[in-house]
Length: 382
Image (cartoon, rainbow, N blue to C red):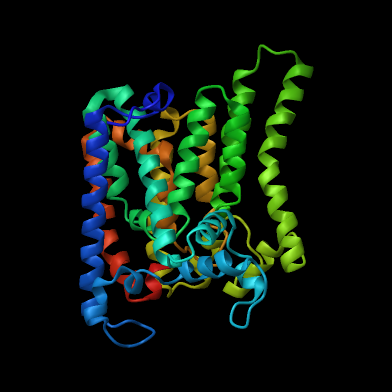
């Protein structure tokens, strides 16, 4: 048996907890894969107008769609314009996830993007779940781990944690940022938050965690010391963001190309709560109402559990939900909420099991719908 360093062992749940996490993770991935196979083999793909038939069992065919194609482009070419992928469109996708996958592909060039990206997503997601299980077990034992895993892995968007999307990486950064902040390691937490901010737009809300966390817990310092240390925390968080803006300027001609890239997706003027306005402007968009309902459910859950969360965690969750409304309609709300780790803890720890049961049932039904929509390239999924 390989010995585990004591510091690493302190971050992991018990042996029983590790087995529980791995079992739940594997079984949930197999269930998602099975639904995807049935959907791809049974229903028409909206672009090809055919069914996958024998190709449905190949994950690289079934799941390599939508944003995964853009991540592949960035991993291979950066933000440099290509014949079929203008830099303005690619710039709408943040760089950390495709950069990691791209770096690994240079080390192991024989592996396809899909499988390398899938490995990265699954490793990040599993690490995040192990860290979360350690926290849950310290609070309420092995039963608390089970409740948490049920809430997280039955979430409608949890299938994004295992395919070439950035959600698995961002979930890991959310957990790491929160954990470091709770331990008083604000500079390391700030670095993790900065990395989250260049993973997805919702990751910018992570900056609340080290900044507000430090501000709340540093009241015993002198004003000068407090201001100086806060400036250091903010500066560290800004480093990945500044590097990203420099790279974007050189490749796409503007540090704000990520905002300009939204025009490619018919979202020229993003602003908070724009999706709410979109419900009035586009009342016939079924996806807008469906995704808006998911968003409203999680807003309600955040209101319910606000007092259970620390201020920085509550602000992070609110920030994610607010950033998710900056499009012309609600898009991907069920996917974005999968990174709300603090809220998952609160749901799992609720003494009223009826709320947890209702959340799980709602997500299971929605998960089947969205998996079928994803593998058949139905716009309902976005």
